[in-house]
Length: 268
Image 1: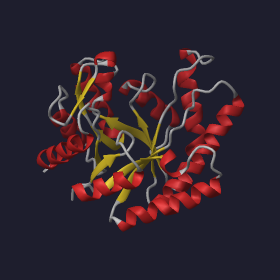
Image 2: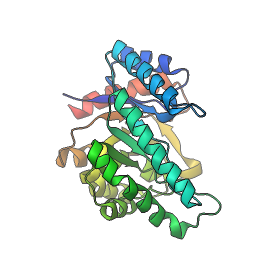
Image 3: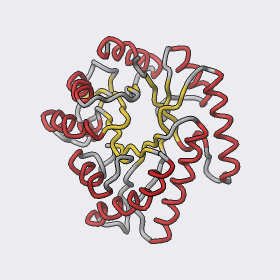
Image 4: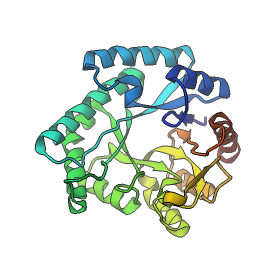
């Protein structure tokens, strides 16, 4: 049974509108953002009540959450900031569980003044290592995304996984993002094969070119070898959700619908 999902972050309109569209179009899973559940400035108790409302909205539409994007950042400038990030992501885990998933799409962090690039790996490894005991005991999974300029490299992702040493920490594979970060298509295909054994969650996304020249497309309309990505994941027995993502400049609803139909044809 195929598990087909839709990513929320780039969809216009309210959460309710997004869920209505996803259900009516034929998706069964959605990936949501932490801010969909726990808005900035809310207390954790308020976030808990919000998570219950979101779960009810999913249930009403016969849908499930595939993952929650934690929106964390371990590239911090102080020990106090790291403490905050570690505790916050644990709280997001509890909200994710209320929403019906134990998978969080996580970040390593974002470049900023005061954090040298030479510190990035140590800070990410520290942050995830400090979460290891908690997520193992509570049975959560962290899927480290390959986006931005910090973790958009399969070798770097794998180095982090090996250093942390937990089967509960793996990858979110976004099929376009390695290319976006200016890796050649040959390297992108090599990365798919390398990262496949570590993948816990997938974003199926297509496009052309990289960095400032990037152009998002519907699945099958860009330059990404999506079939090779699928083959690499199938070869290692990936059984998770395949989430459609679309970053084109034309109608989002049409782009997501095309993606769903493309996936149905190529995953069969």
